[in-house]
Image (cartoon, rainbow, N blue to C red):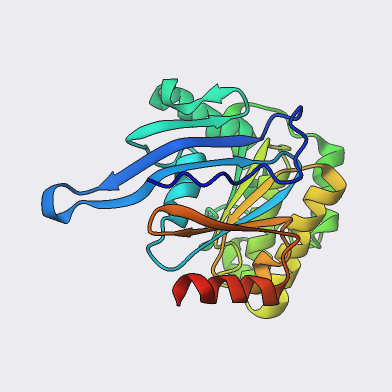
Length: 255
């Protein structure tokens, strides 16, 4: 199993990580068809930083993010969001944790087609019975260029606009962590850059914590750190990544 010590470089030990994986094991199938997606992964995701997870296809990167976000179970080890151990939570408690403490941005946008942009943005708060901070809502929708699109339904918006609605939905509740699963995967280069700048600003201006899975070196270069997986293990980490360093590291892993 992987026993690399990553995730501590340059991080103040007195500041607890936003999320932590400790010796996490996750397998799919059984017998001869058994596949080990995570083989004892340990990593601290620093608070108020932007972390990108990369690796070849089948390396376990999406499984790691889904496990950290409470979207997928794990076989052994422990996962913590702040001080909360996910292993000790019931399915209902996990649902509440995802709704109340986490934000999500997916490749497929995951907007409700019958709702307007405004209704999609406030949907998690409405489901939870929470009031939306109107001042913050207005700042976020203005910052994301959505102020004049709030009455439009997803089908009336471009892909980039739909993903900005998804970003606004993730940001508006000020979650502890925003998780993004290939958040720029379906976007053209301009829309991709807009979304990455939104996430970068959320960290720099709003002290958010962002964790994304990506296969795109340009997307990863917006992060404070990139963690690389291969065969279910963390094999490398880059701080202050550049496109060139990310590509060189990926080439080394895939080579």
